[in-house]
Length: 318
Image 1 (cartoon, helix red, strand yellow):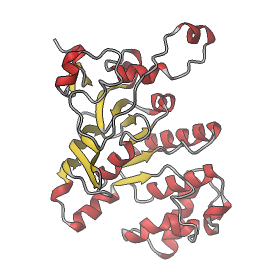
Image 2: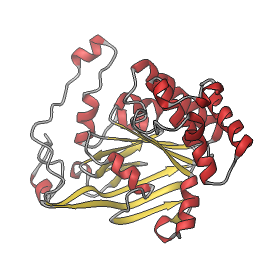
Image 3: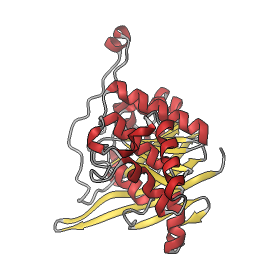
């Protein structure tokens, strides 16, 4: 658990537009250990999904390093990158859009097996049937099309597709946000069972802090394209260091009316700065209730203020 399976250093994804450069991801540092779940949380539009696509090089990074299993992905040949992607799969947010409506379940789950030369013919069909059964679906569904399934069933098909090539890391991009609460629990339990069975590592992206708390070993909080705090899950929820994290956690409902009525809700004022405009100082200072003069002059770096607990905030600097 000490060696990093994935290391992301200074990842940037900038997109030129007619009005300037949009800095969707602007210097993200992450590390995921083998068998670990790292939760990546933040408001919609903060760059979570774009970060995942930059890690897998579905979108070529503008700058930064992505090191997977000790190899810098920037230095890999096309064939080596293809082999690395076999170990790094994705589950997408929308189960309605992520499956090809013209392909049967057999073809959808079997496609990565064919692409990587892992199985063909009867062996491929047997493997698909095994995967369907493993994710809780009837193997006889292999001849059906995506429109014949519910949202929860489609997401299980997406999980089976990601699992087909036996990856070491799965990037889960809001995998349950489009599902009903009861189905969310089923899919999350499935992902946890698969992790225990196959030793998978997850990057679990979500804006739902209650879900992230349940599944994650560690959590990274993103704001405006940058990671502003990282910590083990329990410590982050018990003692957040960054004012943005405090505000996010204050919005999570507590299933105890007495406790809920007594706690203080932090309501952020002001607008999120545009990622297409140059920002001086701390990106969060325009909404931060604890901002002071230095916040407008300098940009805080992500520093470890407690063991395995880092935050980019001047409040905790000695």
